Image (tube, rainbow, N blue to C red):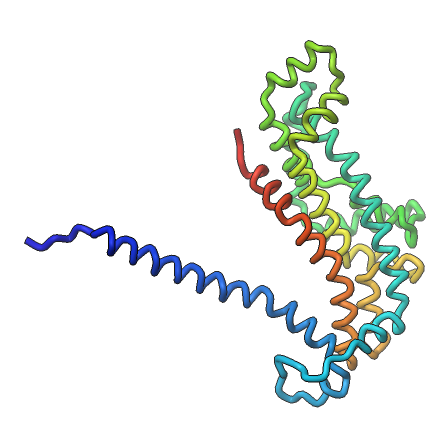
Length: 288
């Protein structure tokens, strides 16, 4: 009778083969993800003449140059757009956190009439396409006379139903006994939120802040729609302005240099806070 039992040696070999396959697939996926960034960086250090004469794309350059970065900053006031984007991002993120943290606390801990109905209606807002919201926001901001202002740029982005929901789920993971004990000691709701709930849920709060920063930094449609004054242009407007000025269509290396400069802060931000992001996402997906 044939013995079909798997020996420890054979089992160990199967695990080794599976590990090799997994690492190969992960390596292939990493190359697919990283390649666009590599191509963007490579193109930004190629001279215009070298890039224009490449009938077959070259995956390296023997004569890298930084002149494209100079052109990116001289073709448009990119430094001013950077400052505008920084102001827009910082204020929008700060105001949003001031709005969503108390809202998430109210839905997770406080009891008031119609709470479940209101929260259900909030979640239903997530089903509305962004395009419809943008049209409504544009009409509202225009009627308020806030076009070409930082207020008009910031106001439609100061809250997020999804972030309220994510933070509410994290707040609800904190045992109710802590809240009841705090109330017995005479602790106010605000003090309990600041001293207990926010420190416990710090990874999720940091994750939400970083995601909002990325969202604001990459914002394109709304800034293009609500601003036509260059004094309020963001970096996304700057890239489009390069294209509209003409040289962006021809001088792709200079355009890629601008994209590299714009992308660098977000890449650094993710590298610095990657552990907090992973921790916050994992907490958001764990209940109880």
